[in-house]
Length: 182
Image (cartoon, rainbow, N blue to C red; front, side, top):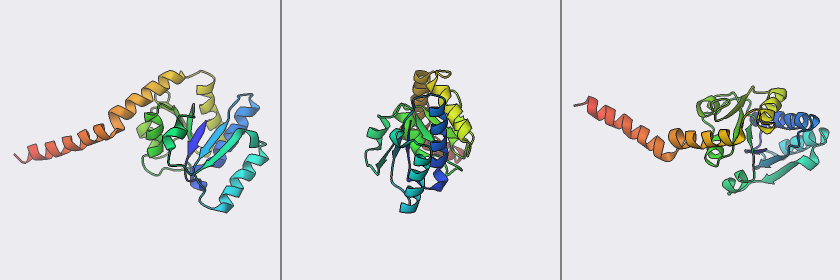
């Protein structure tokens, strides 16, 4: 499982760490790859303390900042975005979809517009580690077909959110406006 963020409280990383602990308690052999920097040294210490409290030090890797997000996405089997509240359409979700990495994300602003639950990824309740663990387990344990999620996400990203599809949608609006003036 991987996540990419500037780690700060609103990103819900504590929820993801608790979900990982729950998965491991269920004997699901999950690991977490955390890509990105921390908002503050104090918050970095808090997150790493949370990992230690759950005895997950051997199962969580912090990479720090990277300019090669696609390279990190290729290392992931599943992308998790445990945001506590929305910040618009999360670009990192679209990047994961384009890279063919199935996404598990929380039901906050922007996520349901990109991901159809059970079709292009999985949506969990925000601030609920149990529900996030359940959503991840649906993929890991095969309730949802990983390859089907992957393919559906890639097609949806290409058809609805790629630069070409978004440019075509903007051009269509302009065409409609120009035709209305005639």
